[in-house]
Length: 441
Ligand code: PLP
Image (cartoon, rainbow, N blue to C red):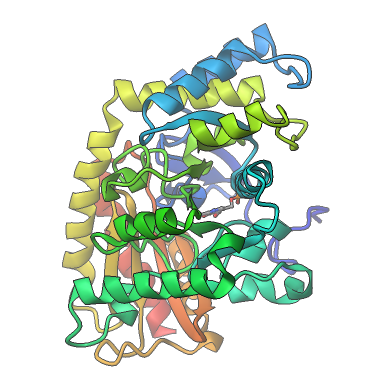
């Protein structure tokens, strides 16, 4: 009998007892290949000795120091590393304990920047319909996942939303990719004008959409266009890299690949890689300088920010990524996994789209490939695939949801960066069995 409020209130999940590398074991003796890194978290796999050793060393030195009194060497070193690899100008770091907290922090930083710039009327965030930015009330308000928002809707601030960059579903037959991208940018500009550009604080977007829709990269030029529009109207660009950042797509920050430097970036998941709960907000130097020269204080804070053991784990993760050349590995393995998925599912009549960037990949399941008609929500195909995958010793991250009134089933794959081609082949083979079994039910 469990006393924990589990996600599913009727069924407790299996009990995980140990994990190493790509594998997780449960108390019933089953072993699972971790093909999703939990929820795109475990980028180095489990039980990496260098990270464990760094955490031990930190606990022995100083396990906790409240930021009202102290900073620590380890947090400073981590911040310096994150900045060194960040897009141009992102020179300031604020540590938090996870992705939702990072988004709340980023939104408050953006708002305080407006206030200290004498623009107190700025109060609007614009976001995309297909998005997930976290489960706390501010982050939930910005995100577009209708199912997650619904019970809490009266508590959430109003957020104008624009179309996501979702080529598979939204690019019309005969429309060029350039015209499609231009139409999205036009819609964003329209939303800013509708809200009144002087009222808008920031535009929030995931460079690669993760948990609502599954590994959807932008079209070429989309984020350059977004950057130009934000600049035109003095709107901040807030990139949520909680899932797609920290090497997951083959560069430390995914938006680097789109040639754009945002004003604020959030990261989490892969930052601590599952060894510790940690997230971070990176901001442009000029933005934080406005506060520094103004009130001199960022009106925010949590008890566990900059936690030394979390910072030690994240710093060790950064060093391993560099020493083991894992960004190159992600690019290489990402390409081979994409090829394997096309091989295995390219002719499957129920796989409508195979997409992603680096080692953030997804399948979109459809009833009919020609019409792209999704399966009915009642069928809960994504959940059936997850159960079948677990039965086949495989962890994948399934998603079902309604986006723009349309249901979709997606399977997200985010294997650890240490995966070999043989690991990936085994993952794809088990996934084929799981998908076929779920489709037969
Ligand atoms: N932002 C994005 C893009 C995410 O994918 C998530 C989690 O999936 C979050 C924010 C929220 O992060 P957390 O679950 O750590 O609060």
